[in-house]
Length: 426
Image (cartoon, rainbow, N blue to C red):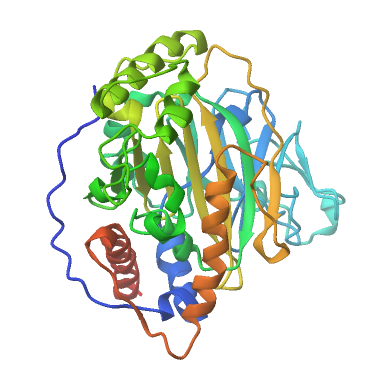
């Protein structure tokens, strides 16, 4: 089924100030952890990183570390990455392979499914060493579209129900067949919501990414809010109405889009430019093993940007997609971890799995030259720590949002819903 194109109903949100304490307060961050992070489905990684039994990766969320492991029967299970003897972490963060998990502190051993199979000198424990009590604690784990999600709440409903409209909207892209082309994690000196906010609106393009207005249109961006999640359809291969070349085919459109798909000396109209760019991708797709049958012209030209509450965002295109995960820092609400993977719609091409790279804004690290689009992301990475610093000013009290920032307002409403429900049940 094709991606629904109809607009979502106006969410009817009240444009009220958002207190800065939600971004700077340790107390508020603790409430988020207690009532939201431990109750929601979040993406832990790609199933393709677990190609054979015993392959695993860790997922670090707040103070928790989760082992996500391919089982001998082909399923994927998750367990807390902590030995039940004295609390030692079983594996360092990252990917690897294991026949079993052995604690490096006292040698306790666990099967791939987390079952305790050996405790050194078990006879020395007068209270006994009971497998059912001392095996690794399970974590809810389910898959969608090649992504592995976990939920720390053992009573949580199914992932498919939590995702709501997302599968209907994104299944036509067949992400389960896509391959990782770039992978990095950046420690950023800002709250995780500061980062989510930056990618939930096109309002900042005119000032932050001015050069992109020659080939992308912030002025005709569409915003849709659903139950928990949101969408932004951001036109590309189309010039902003703010740009002197509005309603023309600019040199930037020719260079950055048309020429990259083999279209030289184009002389047509703006609408024709979009059509020929879309058609060129349809011709390229079979050489990559890509399936574009369910995508329309807009999806072949524009950025279909989805945010899956609370912290996963998709910059979705026909042949590549950027996926961001925004994770909270375990101690400091003024820091966060930004996971960025670029996936390619290339099932028929051998794409070597790249090693994850690590960066830090505190160290002045940049992405320019490291990946396609790194220069664009660097402009956001420059702003984010400065936004966070400004929020701590005595002169600043609240976020003052406009209609182009409706997804930010919706994100806060959803977040507050979790915190209120948690407080009510406490």
